[in-house]
Length: 593
Image (cartoon, rainbow, N blue to C red; front, side, top):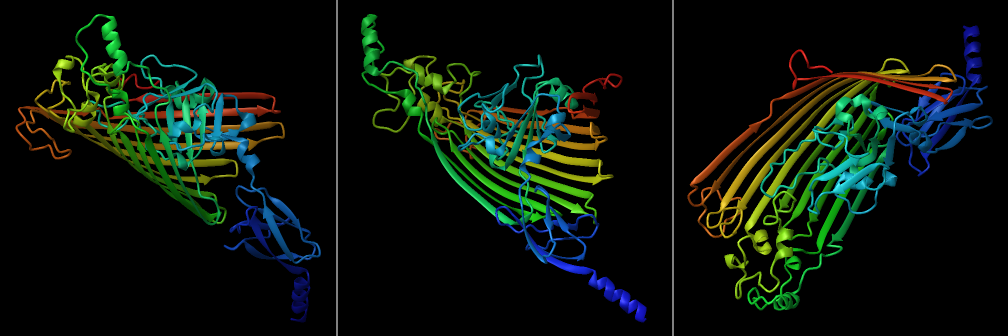
């Protein structure tokens, strides 16, 4: 017993206690940071306030402090029992990694052409869609807004047009979820197409990576032929919860108006050409009558935080964007939840959960290149006789007068007597468990559901003297829905085999299912003069009723893929990629290629 007590006292004499705090550069306590004795396995983790207490051998000289996303630091503890540590953000390590298909690699291992745009490099301003963030920021990437209408379609070309029959837009991938490119938006007569990224809040995006050449896009097969846009959303950071909020407003108008004749110039032209008709004795500017200085309001709030074993971020946003043409607007409400959890003492088991919910409401008009000059409201304004009134004298009614010309439509009447409202609800949810089998080998599963529903409400008043509804009136209701599911399994192996030889291997299997359907009902002959929006059903007698429905055959795509990246002495780089796709669009004996 005496021998055991002496041994215990000797052991205690060889131990001492070190206490301290671990903070970020911004002064935020870092909870769950790792504190270990250099050269030994003894270690503890910091508490929620960043403090720690550790028993170390009397011979210990240094502690190693590490934290996710920060630069590790060794602290000398000779003749010291209390330390205060400040860790710097490891931004260099993050900048040296590039997101590619189904994983990420070091920049120096990359053989493909990839442009990476981080949040700090995005275009600044009141932006409504993610593609506007990188306009002019990536070489070889062209972003064009097809019309000035809020929420309308966007043309994105990566190194020019690449496809003959399958469209030329790139493949969009959001947090590992490939988008089908379709929309639940039900196309009415005023439809200008939709932006495939309208459902996203630009404030939630952390980075956008563009894969441009065959080496970079091959892992996505033929769907990546036009390039691939990888969008990564923001994640919560370890530490005390942080709240961020922003509010912005902007105005927009026509930068340069096309020159047309004024009323007096028009009268002079009639006189110069010896014409005796066409002068109605007034002076109006039809283009000014249909346009306005539009306001845009954008509000965002986000809360994020957590520990090294569990991080989260919750955000919400509201956008109200008026179009420069009267009656057009876009309202968008978004909510986003992202989280990352690590389990087991080794933290080898991880789980990511992402949920994105969006509702967009649009009021649209005839304003595209497919409806002809009699349907396009801007063309109507530019060709309007500037000596003819737009409003009937003594009334507030837009002038409807066939005498003006059989193909001429009062642009103000077009705005007042045509209504097209689009509503789209989007839910994209994914769950992604992963497990580090070894320090070099990781398995990951992604299961996601992309569910979208669209509603159309459209009416054309019988007073409008175009579209074949003069003295009749028309109304349409429509519904669309898209349901896409994904199951992706990947194995990623990254190993610095020797000081000169680095290997990165990815193997995977993916199953995608696409379902798209819609229906609509339309009718003519609504005799009442003023139709009440959303309440037209049941008014008058609908003598011409049309019912249509569409259901695309359910499409399935099964793929097997692999990629190996070899780096030898940072001088010789080789990337090899294989992908086999099987599609239900083809016959049973010819589905894979």
